[in-house]
Each structure stands twice: as C-alpha cells, then as structure tokens.
Length: 140
Image (tube, rainbow, N blue to C red):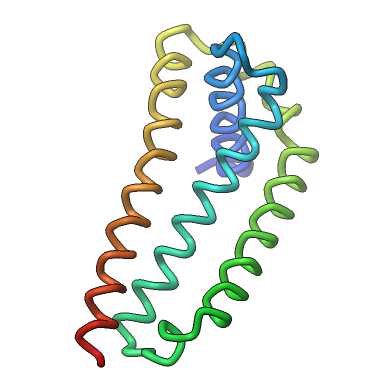
C-alpha cells in the first residue's frame, strides 16, 4: 500500500458519502450529513466490537451497568468524531481532485457501497444487541 493509502481511501469514503447525500433535494447540508453518517456508523461498529468483546470475555458487570456502557460509548463517539474532523480537515481536500478524476463507474460503485456499509452497521448493532440481551438473560 502506498504511503497515503489509508488517507486516500478514507478521503474517497468521505467524498462518496458527500456525493450520496447531495442526491437528496431536501438535504441542505450534505457535507455535514455525510460526516454524521460516517461518524455514527464507525461508532456503531466500535460499540459492536466492545459489546462482542465483553460477551466473549464474560464481563457481565460491564454489560449490566448502563452507566458504564453509556460512558464507554460516549467516549468512543467523541474520539471518532475528533478523529473524523481532524482527518477531514487535513487530507480530504488533498485527494478530492484525484477522486473527481476517477471514471464514473467506480465513483458510482463507491457511492452505493459506502451507504450500504453504513447501513450494515445498524444491522450489526441490532444483532449484537440481541446477543447482549440473550447473554444478560442467561447470566441471571
């Protein structure tokens, strides 16, 4: 992978989501909306990982404590929001020209794939929420 490979791919994800959000005639702030979708989907994936790890490690105390879970998830959200804002301000604009010069087919494919991956984060969080519920009911 090139030196800026991860930065380039993250910039392409942000730009693809922006293009997707611009499709809506009712969206007055597509850049902000794209950022919110990306941050929320990344947060959901991270929280899914924390809950899955908690179930695998048998951390029933963490899973039973709503305050601990909420504090952990808010810390994850704030860290991801900060990282996204920093990344967006530092290198998305650097790769925008390269993204705009891609052929139309890959850009459309990314514009479909990125929201689909974001939607999968909701499915993953619902699935892990069900697993947590089953674990907590079985742990009682």
